[in-house]
Amino acid sequence: IADPVSTVHSNKPELLVVDGYNVIHCTPRYEKLVYDHSEDPYSSDVHDMARTALINDVAAFAQGRYEAVIVFDGAGNISSERPNLPARGVRIELSPTGVSADTVVQKLCIEAREEGRACSVVSSDGTIQAVVMGKGVTRISSRMLVDEIKQIAKEHTGFIKTMWCGDLACE
Image (cartoon, rainbow, N blue to C red):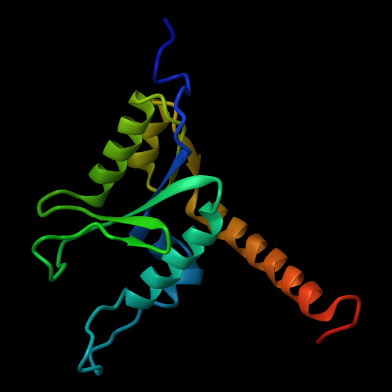
C-alpha cells in the first residue's frame, strides 16, 4: 500500500497555500504598499493595499494550475466571525483568535497531503518550511513567487500589446 503522504492520488487541483503576511513583509513589491492610514478617517488598516495586491497577484499566478488559499493572521480583525471569504477565486483564511497564521498554513498543507493531494506552500518562514516539507509539500519562497508574478505580468503585457497593436510598433 502506497504511503498517502508521499503519493499524489487526488483528482483535486494542487493546493497553493500562501503565508500572506510573510510574503507581504518579505518582498518590496508588497512591503511598499503597507503604510500608516492614521490620517484617513475611514481606514486604519495599514495592510489593506498590500493584501489586495497580493490577492490579485496570487489569483493571476494560480489561474488554471492551483486552488489557492491565502492565510492571514486574524488577530485584530474587526469581524468576530472572521469569515473566510473568496476574493478573485482565491480563498482567504483568517486565523482564529489565539491561533497563529503559521499554524493554519501548516494544518492546511498537512491535511492536503494526508488526502493524497499535491500541495505547495509559499513562505519564507523557516519553521513552516521545516514542518511541511517533511510531509511532501513543495516550497516556494516569497521571492520566487514574486519573480513568477513579475514574469506573468511581463508576458501578459506583451500579449496585450500584440492584441492591440498587431505587428505595429506600439509605445
